[in-house]
Every structure is written in C-alpha cells, then in structure tokens.
Length: 77
Image 1 (tube, rainbow, N blue to C red):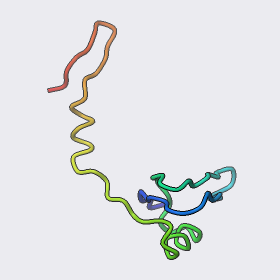
Image 2 (spheres, one colour; image 1 turned 90 degrees about the vertical axis):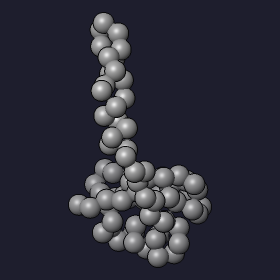
Image 3 (tube, rainbow, N blue to C red; image 1 turned 90 degrees about the horizontal axis):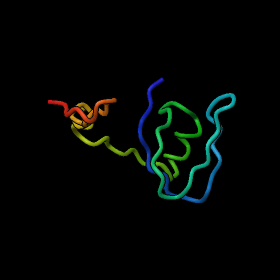
C-alpha cells in the first residue's frame, strides 16, 4: 500500500483507515496516509489534505546521527 505525507487543513475530523486503525485529523498536522484510501482522496479533493514533500537527505541525516552506546557516544563517519 503506497503512502504519502499529507498536511491537513480543516476542522477536527475522525478518519477510519482500517479495522482498529482510526485517527483524528487536527488543523495543521502532518500525517502519513494511504494514497488509495477513498476518504483520503475525498479530503484531498476538498482541499483539506495536501501532499507534503519529504525533506531531501532525510535518510543521509539519520545515518550521520550520533549513536549512543553504553560507553558513551560514537559519532558516525
């Protein structure tokens, strides 16, 4: 299932994605949602959800983050 990051703009709204998977959308929040979901498409069509581009180099930044061990902090190179 393909997902995308969306920014929600609108009134507080409940969203049922799958059995046991519900969330509340609050104005201004960013959330990862399934692209093909009927309700996601409807909210996007109404202009309440807009796709947010993922920051470039996010994977590179995570791989360079310091790793904490029991002996202290090891810096990734």
